[in-house]
Image (cartoon, rainbow, N blue to C red; front, side, top):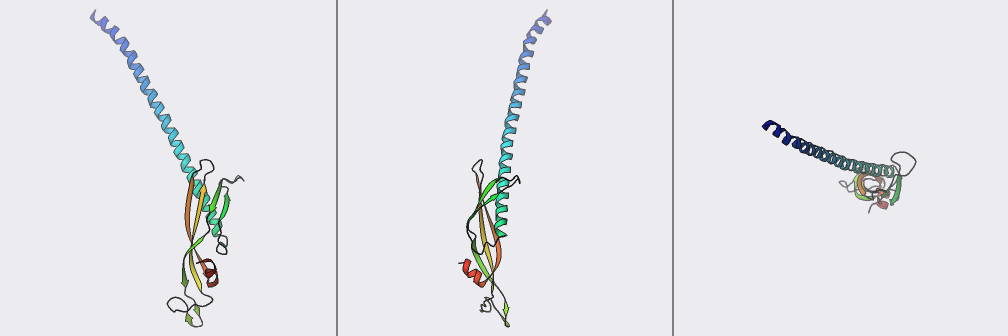
Length: 165
């Protein structure tokens, strides 16, 4: 008789253990779902950031390939990242800034021009360093990315005087 009483006591324990296991499984699935959602948002943000950087680099390349030292001005450049014919990003390019210049030695009439020789000839050439700043704003989220680039350009004496302070 003792054995039959213990069987009745154990029948309710199986139900309780089963419910606890079901609750644990539900919590595990719920946390996995939440973690995958936040990972998806993180990957989406990284992709948007990379696209914005690519747009800034494309705009910078476009400015560098133009004669930007003739008249440095600010400009807005439309960039189509996925080549679907629609503008994906608008890049704001600040006016290019000449931040330094160094005279390149030139040999003229048997005399070397330059800082060491103390002679400046009309055909002197200058190594100029320019700063290009691009700002990209994501149209969906409104997040902005700023990219600064430097480029070296060789200019003549007259060109340097007209654009470098």
